[in-house]
Length: 240
Image 1 (cartoon, rainbow, N blue to C red):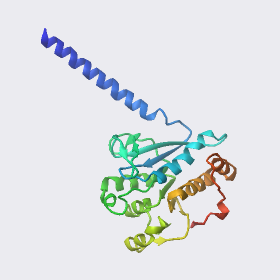
Image 2 (cartoon, helix red, strand yellow):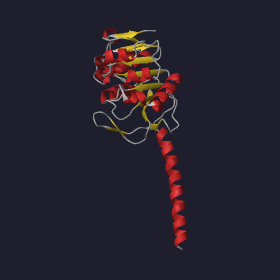
Image 3 (cartoon, rainbow, N blue to C red):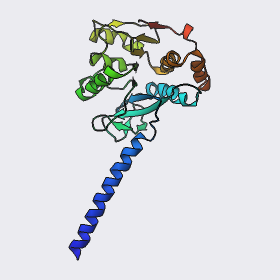
Image 4 (cartoon, rainbow, N blue to C red):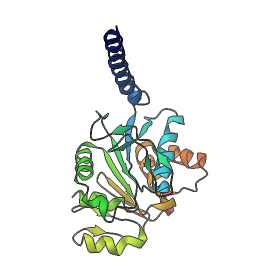
């Protein structure tokens, strides 16, 4: 009798596990709406809040604008466990890029993280992920020291870029053959948009929205977040 009970419990556990896995798979995609740009934000322990939340805010608010192709925004990491930002906020990734089937990524956002000048640059799994997504993505954007990750992945060869003002010299020293600009908020070259980061991450995100949707929509997004936005007065470079 005891054996039968144990077998019944085991069968229930297996059934629940299968149901849970199926539900998790469905839940991962419940916020991925068709007919939108898929925008993946790469996060890890030490991600800086502003470089994540600034573009996330701008891109998320596209769903409230009429007659445009809005954006699905989601977090990707090499874990589904919470990652902790530099400032201590626990972030729950939507997808594990090592194990999950990801939706096609149209725009990859690489916020800055504490380890982007050292240990993260040795993470071959993450660098390979960035490189593979960049191949097919329409745009790849970085904020602050996120540019180091793109450069280390070999994506910025012959591409003009910028990074956090305080790390320009370190950036030039580490990647002496790259075309690097300072005293600008962001640089757009091909599919790559790199920004100085910090609060100016808003401007780089608004620039991409103005590029995709036009000035009127970008102005509306800025107004909704009480941001003074004028592309003509924002120091930037469009290389090609």
